[in-house]
Amino acid sequence: MRKLFFVMLLGLSFVANAQTVKPAKKQKAKPFKVAIGGGYASPANTDFIADLGKAGLVYKIEPQYELSRNLEVGLRFEQAFILRPEALDNKPYTSKAKSIMSAALTANYNINTGTAFRPYLGVGAGLYYSDKSEQTYQTSGSPVVYYPLPATVVFGGLARAGVKFGILYVEADYNLISDTSVTNAATKLTLTAKNTYFSVKAGITIGGSRK
Image 1: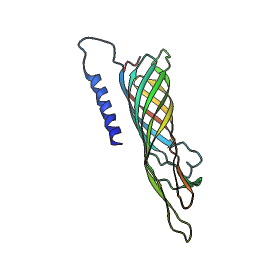
Image 2: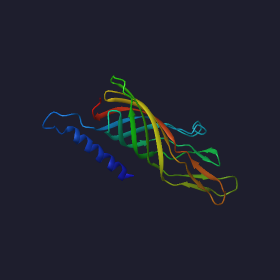
Image 3: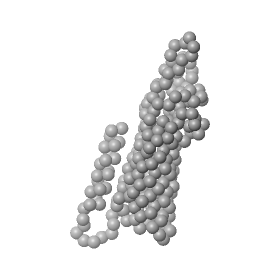
Image 4: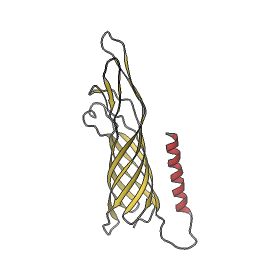
């Protein structure tokens, strides 16, 4: 995933440079901007979260482009530091994976209220990377059985709602991601990791028209 964050930093540098170049004459604000934020993330699977899932921090960097006064598109780079719930044969088991990263195309619709207070709704889709983990299982008098969950890159989606006030924003989103699973050939038992999570973030937006 190093390439993912290299692209993220490159995009941030591009947007920052576009905002610092002074035009020769007065003109409208550029439609390029970048949203930076961080906050709280938690696994979304309520069946196992009480036993295993552990909430943590999340951060994002999202270059955006304003297509119109109400519509903007972007590319969100995000990393959530959470312990995802894992279940062996539908029974809660120890969780080890600690990070989920993503790169997703997004679209926001801003609701014009005639004030600096602007609610918005958004959707997105892209690739999610989940860390690998390995579990072991042993019953009395039997050998240790290994369940290696591989690192996975899968297609997922998100939905979000938030509110902007000037350069500040607060948003909540839900990230729907496929489960990761592995079945042991000897025991026929399946270890499944629940990757879906939600988050609440606050941050600032650099650049853009902020109409």
